[in-house]
Image 1 (spheres, rainbow, N blue to C red):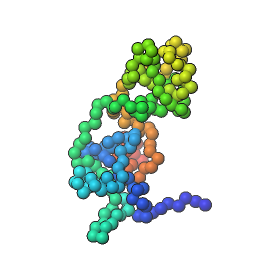
Image 2: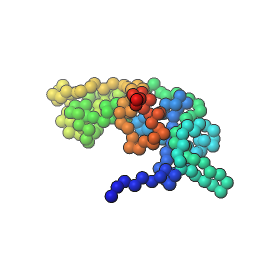
Image 3: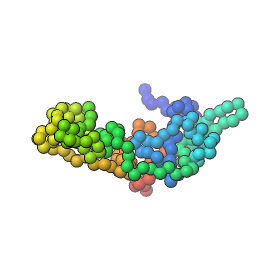
Image 4: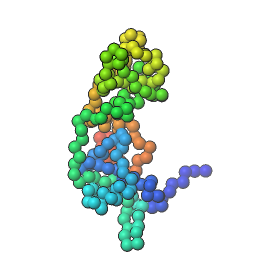
Length: 191
């Protein structure tokens, strides 16, 4: 019994996503990692919107044409990244590193209004923290002080750069060898 690796040339196209880089050769997003399926990648190639940086061994064919699937593509035009990310549940959990800000648990996460809405608390970056369900229930409609709970880090509005940095702490399940140079460019090089 062992692991059987399917040769890259025999992979299905669905298992060959392309890493999408901005025109500066940095990923558009680290978490979730900016990936396009093979159809979107090929469409962008044919519309001359991207440069192919690296390819899989896997080819797709038609009766008159064959082409290796791109594994890394770079946009030809730079897409300006926003200074601040959208206020979403996912981005909030990413800011808090998928950890309850009261007990440190990574299970059963929800979000908590640090200053409850009943006391004038707003639904904003500066008032919402990740919290596990038990801590959220324990705190209830009270402030952390009123509930006798300590908050590890007060909520704040992160920049997009901060979220990218945090996102790099959570590598995706699948990494192709050709992506390595573009994802971890600040890692120490092997001697």
